[in-house]
Amino acid sequence: NVGYYGHLADVLQEANVPIISDAVCNAPDYYDNQITTTMFCAGFEKGGIDACQGDSGGPFVAVDCLSKTSRYRLLGVVSWGTGCAMAKKPGVYTR
Image 1 (tube, helix red, strand yellow):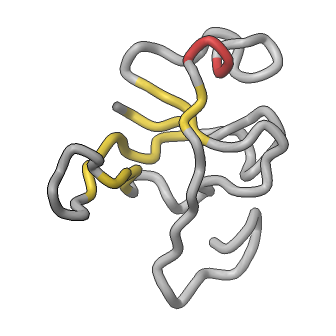
Image 2 (cartoon, rainbow, N blue to C red):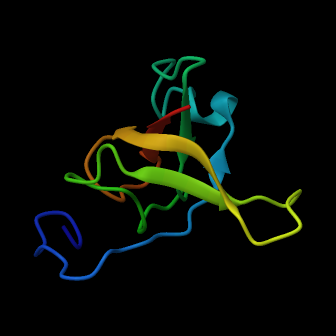
């Protein structure tokens, strides 16, 4: 979906979101210690951009800075979240 309850996209979508530290993501106003060592969070404090319903199983990738070519490295897989692109509720990914 493009947005919460939005229409289905005809073209593959991408979002650039920063990884959030486990300490921040486990804070009471975020996910209150629900994030385990097999998970990580990514998104913006104010929300606005996020993985959403239907994205589960999709890749979280980053450019491999150590590679001599512009290769992508799989860092995680879209797992779950609360709502979609909400403030202090970033996407949760499986490591």
